[in-house]
Amino acid sequence: MRALLDLVVPVHCAGCGTAGVAWCACCAVELSLDPVRVRPRTDPGVPCWALGPYRGPARRAVLAAKERGRRDLAAPLGLALAVALARLRAPDRPLVLVPAPTRAAAARRRGGDPVARSAAVAAQWLIDCRTVPLLRMRPGVRDSVGLTTYERAHNLRDKITTVAGAVEPAGLAPNAEVVVVDDVLTTGATVTESVRVLGRIGVRPRAVLVTCAA
Ligand SMILES: [Zn+2]
Image (cartoon, rainbow, N blue to C red):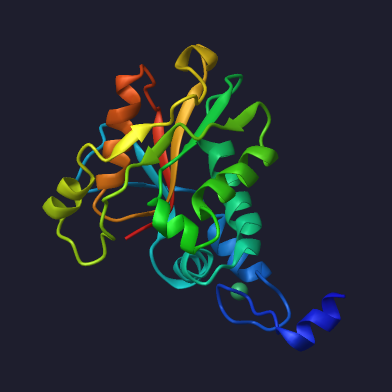
């Protein structure tokens, strides 16, 4: 079946274009280096980590997952997040991943939310870890491409909210570590607003982890 599909829709590595694989070993290695500490201009007040810079295979994979409907990339991107989380997490504490919210219109266009999908894959790889989608974006948020740091923050102000009926904070284990996960960190506006809104319901994330830092 795979061979037949390859004839119809040839598979190429989303990171480097190598034919015959969706994600090649070289690109996988590039994404599994130690996560690096990053400091966005808009500071969410918790440590931010990235798998790497917003370039090369990681950038191409994020864009393919986001803009070209490559749902299959949730597997390698999620695994890479899991490797980083295994290094960053405290031992013997439950881990809760909160995906940063995506604009609903963008998620509909993309056939789902690539960040939530990758986070769910990451949680499957880790012991005592789950994804809790606590955040959503209200309508009326513009695409942030081309906006300045100030405009991005203003665009999101009061536009991120907690999901009604999502797990009550009391439902999270008291010793759980919460990590906000996103695909790209640019100015930090989205994760800052996410951390602020989580704080209002008593959830204090320990860190932010993104695939790429621009
Ligand atoms: Zn590759």
